[in-house]
Image (cartoon, helix red, strand yellow):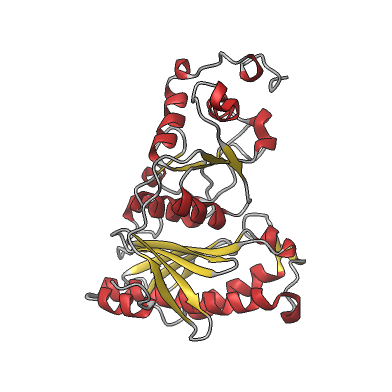
Length: 343
């Protein structure tokens, strides 16, 4: 594949059988919809997009923003000619049924990070494509069944990250031509990066293994990791994953002891499954802390799951802290169990 090659050329070469043709049609449709969403975001208030509450809530109880509603309309319209058995969207209570004999089903979040709209920060679109088996209820298989997944980042550039199950490629929108062009092929997660992303304000709510890992990072060169770390937190999943694909590191959105946060706040079908698939295809890892995310099976459309993903060494370290608490080093009093971070 040549750098600068368009997404449509890649999809044309990929579509060699009915299932792949359906996948290519779905990715192409989502890409086309994302160009329209990108233009809306770029115009912002000039196009009536302010980030204000729309007056309703989505199927999971989150307050809908004006762009949430518009992005959903755009994606549904873009997918209307795609042969799918079912659609699962963050914005819908139930599945949208299509042709039960179609080769694929699609789960998506039309606008990830919508709380960032009014502050002019990065948002995105996430999607997951799975095979359909006639007679079998869609979205009841583990995440490892995914055929394709990816996401669009609406930032200073609009970029589309895509895996078709054979590595990860990144395309950036050529705004003049209104096509996506390849900029990075065979992306791999840098293995050794001293960077982690977590909402540290929830420290007191975390399980001990998460506290132990973050405390090790905070201790820096004086702690058990013997190196200084930088913390990053954007609050937009697409931006966090894009940064890890570019610079490495680890992202943590664990469950915690707040009501309603036992399994975190990210949704399995259209957030943690596709992002975990992308991460593994790029040579990284994705875990709940106790098990591989792609081994999880959804019981409901909007089921949540913890997500710890990024460079393999860091994910494995966090898993070890969950399975073997004695692996934690608490020699630095400030970060020990009875240190200043504990009540």
